[in-house]
Image (cartoon, rainbow, N blue to C red):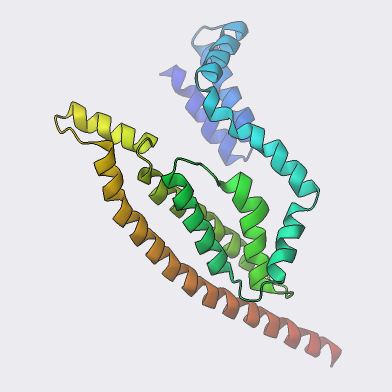
Length: 234
């Protein structure tokens, strides 16, 4: 039972908003110590797990590249591009990104993600399309960023099963085969198509409503700010 103290360490660390990576490593060391392992054995276990699942750590290589691009004006370039596109709205940008996410997932290409696309590109582009030179409160900007993140979630979740070699489909096939209900990967991928199309249609409707709501919110804030300035000058 005491070996579960690592779970307690993770919960406390995340509640206190410590660095998640350090929290997980600390939890691993604590669990190893209470299990009677010495520091070298704990490091060996962590290294073995890293080597076994090294493909999962590839995203770490992307983060420095994104950081360098942001440092050299990636966000500003994206915002300037959108400002020149009068027809661009946050919803249209998010819907376009979601469609790209689904199509690339259908071909097994994992192009997208919150750290590599949403934060440096899609969210700034959506903000620029919504503001068009105006200002907005932090709450409004957070709503735009949150909706942009949802576009990635929708596209990834409902698009990954369109690829016949997706991990989700392989897992379902394994479970179905063991239960005595053999099913082909191609059949499951075909059944995922209507779901993906329905998700795209529902998301398009949500993005359309979001455009209207966010425009009203920005106009309301602009009116309030103008009235405040006029009151101060009177």
